[in-house]
Length: 204
View 1: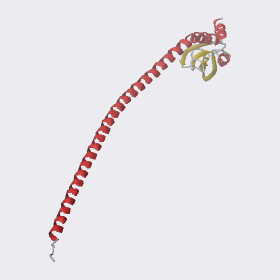
View 2: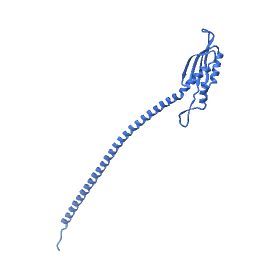
View 3: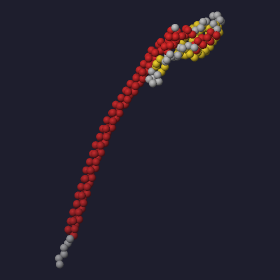
View 4: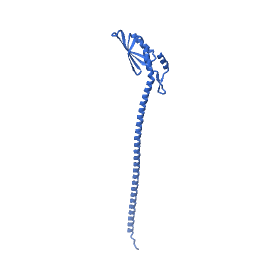
């Protein structure tokens, strides 16, 4: 019976399997490399796109910051303008008052009292003068207390002098009564009730 040697065939099959495995391994490695490169390109593209968007956002943010700064400057200018307008409006409304106030000062001065100085700070008046006696000063204070344009008389000092004859130097403070009050709904000034009556009384 003849014998058949199968060793060379098995060796050839083993070599073929090795070659096939090596080829498959190479193809897998190549495929993995291609996939990795494709993923790298995709992520690189996404990063570039995001950086572009970030740059655009930074530019827009800078523009918005400039616009906000300009708006704040405009708001500040607006507030200054409104404040100036309020001051001008207030001066225009209070302009007739000072005429009546000085007329009222003359009317409240009793006989034997004359003023050497009058100073106004906001709505506060400071009167400096001479009186024949302290009783005259008290009369002056009562007249101020009953006045429609002056109120809250406060006597600071009364000093008796004899160098220019008998009499007293005095310093007295009083508040001006304004005919303009703030309207709570609009924030603007308006003439308070009774202002026309007081004006007509001051003109008599």
